[in-house]
Amino acid sequence: MTHGLTLSEKFIASLCQRAFLKLWTHPNPKGKKDKELCDCLVVCGPHIVIISVKENEYKDTGDKTGWERWQKAAIEKSVSQIWGAERWLETVNEIVRHDGRKVTLPNRDERQYHRVSVSLGGKGHVPLKWGDFGNGFVHVCDEYSVGVVFGALDTITDFIEYLTATESLIKSGVQLSFAGGGIEDLLALYLSRGHSFDIRPDSPHFDRLILLDDMWKGFSESEEYAAIKKDLDNSYIWDRLIEFYVTDLLTDGMFDMHSKEVTKNELALVTMALQPRSARAVLAESFIEFLGNPELKVASRAVKGYADTAFVFFIGKSSDREYRMKELSLRCLVIRGRIPGVITVVGIATDRPGTSEIGYSSDIVYLHLPDWTTEDEDRVIGIQSDLGYFKNVQWT
Image 1 (cartoon, rainbow, N blue to C red):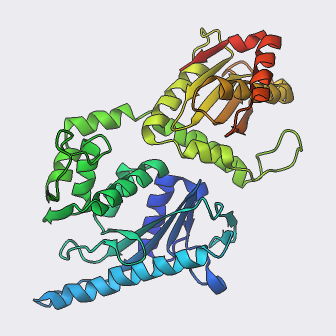
Image 2: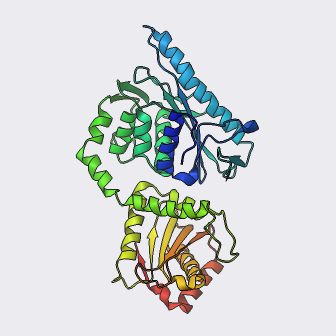
Image 3: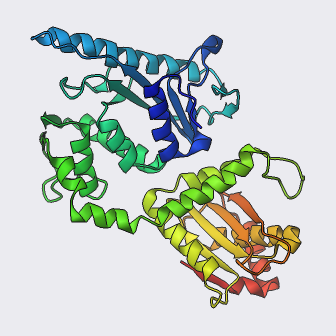
């Protein structure tokens, strides 16, 4: 449920919740003296996305006065709110949501701020000003481009990578010209080039880029884009799996198996949420195939995820969850030591569908080991030697 106070704020909150999921989307959080901090705050891993929504009806005065007035009311005020929110966030370690729930912010030395202004009311008649307004890069969307951007980049990692690539393009000195269109045409270029702005790999140095106003329309209606979306259909199973665990977390249904107390540790879920759309497709397909194929005579499957992550899917009985949890933890440790470059492993254990006589449950494990010592290696070798069933694992 979104808590935006106006229709436009509710619309943006719903877009964010769909793209970034509900655990990390915070509409109308409270700031200094309990005043509204911004219209929506997204906090996931190291990323903090500050979103300000301003709506002002554009009035054509027949000269530049009209759009200057609109720009001041819809963009400049939005940018000012974003900067104010960022300054205050730098002084605190947590924020309070509109509904009263507290949200812990990432460590200050790890935070990565991203600024998004949603400026409504121009209806395509006003050229959008965006970029570095003096205190960092601010991305500006209008009523059309906001739906396109949040819809096509519907994971936190895909969204942030696009923002970062755009900033790098502008900072490189390239001059952008929009021939009647907007940010959506820039997005079309980025997606059509495989999530990149490498326009001419054989001659990467160019200083001007003109974007035609039909680029997004042409790309979004193309067979290429339809094929991309079809390939990613199964990725939304991963979203639903995350939301399943999020519901447990938010309703105090997620317990630590050792302390038997409710835990607010969401690191495993953050790792799952940081997987981009393409990685989610691979993970979801592997998970479904592993659970749904009884002919696979393996106890677990290991899948390499995005960046430095891996996932372990494990079949175990709900009738002995404590044993299942311990074995899952050990399997995660083995995978950490066996896949080069991996430092974070998330394990998910559940029953094989149709096999449990007491009902079904699932367990989740989070393992983060940036440093790998000889003692860790010896421990893994010992586990593999003592527990031969660790050979019974499928790699993807």
